[in-house]
Amino acid sequence: MTGANILVVDDEVETVEMISLLLEGQGYTVTPAYSGTEALEILRQGIQEHTRGGGSLIDLVILDVMIPDVDGYEVCRAIKQDEHLKYIPVIMVTGLGSVEDTTKGLAVGADDYVSKPFRSEELVARVKAMLRVRAMEQELLQYAHELATLNEINKAITSSLDLDQILSQTMRGIRGILHVEAGSLLLLDEDSGLLEFKKILSGSHERMAEFKLKPGEGIAGHVVQDGQPLLVLDAQNDPRFCPRIDEALGFVTRSVLCVPLKVKDKIIGAIEVINKLGGQFDEKDLWLLNYMAGSVAIAIENARLYAELSDFARELEKSQAQLVQAEKLAAMGRLAASIAHEINNPLQAIHNCLHLILRKPLDGEKKSRYLSMAQEEVERLIAIVQRMLEFYRPSREGLAPTDVHTIIENVLALSNKRLQHGKITVTKKLAPDLPTVYAVSDQLKQVFLNIVINAVEAMPQGGELCIETKVSEDGEELSVAFTDTGVGLSEKEQESIFEPFFTTKATGTGLGLSVSYGIIERHGGRIEVQSEPGKGATFTVYLPLNNPALEHV
Ligand code: ADP
Ligand code: MG
Image (cartoon, rainbow, N blue to C red; front, side):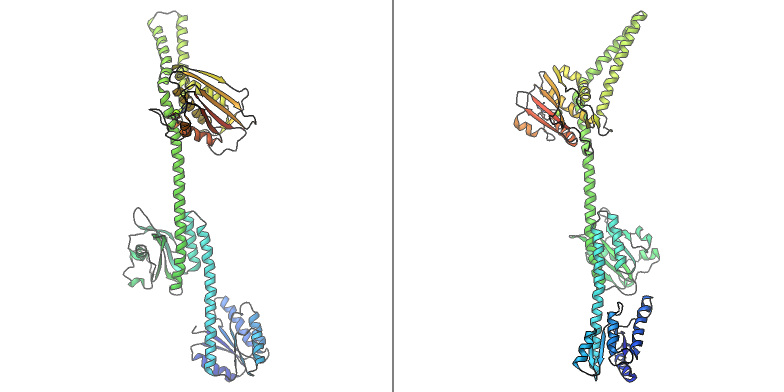
């Protein structure tokens, strides 16, 4: 701590002069004071000027005990009780050399003492030791402050999953602990392999963001390539420095401190600060920046993983929706033959009516009867097509109170021809006054249709399908049971039928029941199966009543 400013307080001019000579010879600056009052005035004024941004602080006080007005002990006590002055070390000079004096001095807070007469080497040695302690204390304080700031930044950075927010916070943090002219955070673009300026320290050239560095180009390029921090104090004469950005921006880079951003052994970018203000970069700056880079890198990686995960979740949701749609198509495909019939019959009827009207001389009454028959068939056609479209269209509507019986009628109408062709008779045991359920009706329709088609396919020789609705005894749920007289299922089959792609049919998709299960589950319900091989099967859909708090379906 050369150039330290030492206040020497003594009423004897000769003593002050002697000590001054001694200390100035060691490179210190000396401020003399000849009384206690003067000494305190100088100390306080120093603080005032310093807080106003000027003046130099007193770094140490050499204080004689025997001084006029306020004595040395009082001055020392005043210093140690003052918020701003108490850190200044005080060396007491006692003339008496008595133990009592010394203890009194230490009691008022003196940091050290010498007794008159003292040897000059002794005083210098004590001053040096005191200043060294003081410097260390100050550095520790500074460190503590920086660590606290660093900790704050760390917390802010690692608690965010938003990449941009993390980067902004990082730059703000750098501003807080390093005083530099410019700075930036660069990230490696995995596709292009180029190093991109992702965030610029406020006050730096905004246009910096337009530049990209090739691997190994410039100091940041080197850092990213080698994975080692770099401290370059004379950039202009360093072969690794790349002057093209300076040239484009009209900026002069003098010194650069650059650290890599590393996650495990992967280097994802770098943080670079340029031209330290009021000094030169040192090891401590490097340590601070490196420390920050450690947590920033992890935060960036976390944010990226999170983004990937949300993308994945979105994809999954999308593919699930696609699956539901695909299964609708498949169901339609399975009805296709019967639907062709359903459409062909009215078409044939219309054709016949029109033929009669056009080809045969008919009286007005007959003509209009045929026309209205044709009209009826056209309406039937419209209804069929409407029903198909309704089923096929991806559902846009959300949850609403839904009448299950209406859905059942709809599904039976849709599969009507298929049931007829398959020689299947349908019986219904519908509960009177069945309450509505909170559901997406389109999706329920799809589930019921899947189950009905499965039943039809399980009865290749024809049979019976019974549909029964009920409300559970506790009134908590309703059930729709589909019982067929088909081939039935073994225990083992029952375990697998809800798995996607499980099918025992040559042209089956194995998706019907898994998609159906997904739909019912999202409605807060479940599907159960009861069966014995050769004795038919019952599929029962349970849906909760009084449950409007369902998650989004
Ligand atoms: P897919 O109908 O395309 O085979 P599903 O998921 O709808 O796919 O059905 C899976 C399997 O469950 C069927 O292949 C069949 O073995 C069995 N299954 C479904 N419903 C019945 C039923 N009512 N009777 C007997 N087996 C059935
Ligand atoms: Mg099926």
